[in-house]
Length: 475
Image 1 (cartoon, rainbow, N blue to C red):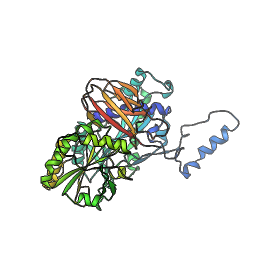
Image 2 (image 1 turned 90 degrees about the vertical axis):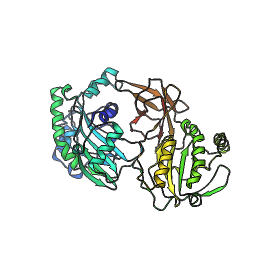
Image 3 (image 1 turned 90 degrees about the horizontal axis):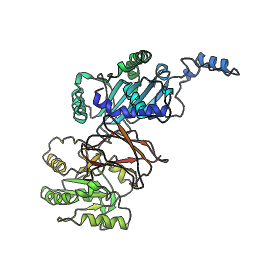
Image 4 (image 1 turned 120 degrees about the vertical axis):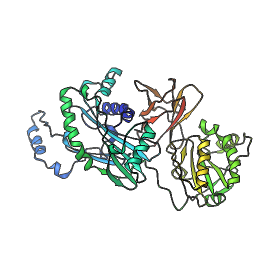
């Protein structure tokens, strides 16, 4: 794959391979069952019975090159299940499958399988920076696969990928593998083999053998809608009842019927960029009245009287009259799934039907453009999505929260430039800070506290000091 995308996942490859500690796929995409998924036919193989008979009572290791059966790995994030043949599960090096959401909002995914040509037994659980660098310099890509929404052609996919990653792939580099449930899966023939010459001969030979098998592996893979895919628009319209900040009962159908288009701005009082844009939103809402449009806020952390008073104070310290703000209700986070990005703004028509992709981040000018496009019945432009928001604190702050918006203490965050990585652990406020100079950094939650699911996504900061919010799901 194009080098810039491969670089985004290199640190994940290293971490997963070390966590595995074996020659085989890492923890990122292990089988759904705790044991490898073995077919009935494999269980009855002659070599399995022979090995059991020969090893009984002898205390000898009679494991042969076929001791590991085929293994089924489900990469739900991208919507791909691959069956790894014994050649992939019995290796002297390591084979690791990783994937990421490239846009951050469930429309474009990328997965790659890498081969790491080192002996994992040579490394302890804790490795030095030099040893980690050795892993990186001996990592060679086997294949890369994209999954994208919307029945996109290869030309359209190439344009989106190049825009999101500054790559330069062409339509001729992409081969359609499958189309399933609104997603198209493409293999990219441009892969990063720049480290191939760093491999010793035994690892080169093994890589060549695995690469020769990858076409059949992809052909026989199962493809399906990614778990993290953006949900399709509900043509029946949103339907809910809640109260506003003044305690008035609000029904969605009555609320949205008052204007041709309404923007629902999902925000939180702890979110700095959310609060900073409130004055501009009040002004914009005032101007939108002449266009028969409006803004409605939904504050996700108003859970009691104290938080309500604080939210009201923030809303009412502006020169313009405050717009309607809603209190959260049962199911609101599923209805307005912001993928852990704050703020996120959704656009609906009079019937409460979501009519465009949401916009993540504080982006008043984009809100204005989106309203104009909708009012003029123009094709709605795609918004470049980020999970990172500029601040003036002279540092990068990674805030890790739970689905109920509570700070998560004790999460290990990895913060990487092109040539080095550093670690931070979130405190009681859920924040890990890094005082590195401005630039684009890769962020990964390396370890989560007990009670939370692992987050294997790769996040990318702005090229200036900024805040990032990562939401962990409870296990």
